[in-house]
Length: 107
Image (cartoon, rainbow, N blue to C red; front, side, top):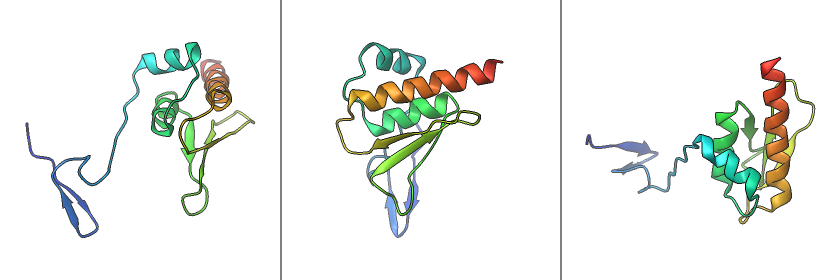
């Protein structure tokens, strides 16, 4: 396996987790799990699922405490507090946004 080197500012990291970088890649099952059990996910998981389904996300201002999810052509947005655990109501709202965005893409 090739050695991974990341440069963060003045720090050199040997791996992606050594300097606190965690990359979550969603698989198709993650959204299904969210539908069945909307309890407790992590914000990184929500971001990965959103990206997989072409839903945009951003942190307003200077890295605020919420993450804003939106989809082109969908009027609603979902604002999710980044603290853990994420309440089921926010996960349900994100799933509804993904469903709405999927309906627009397929038309």
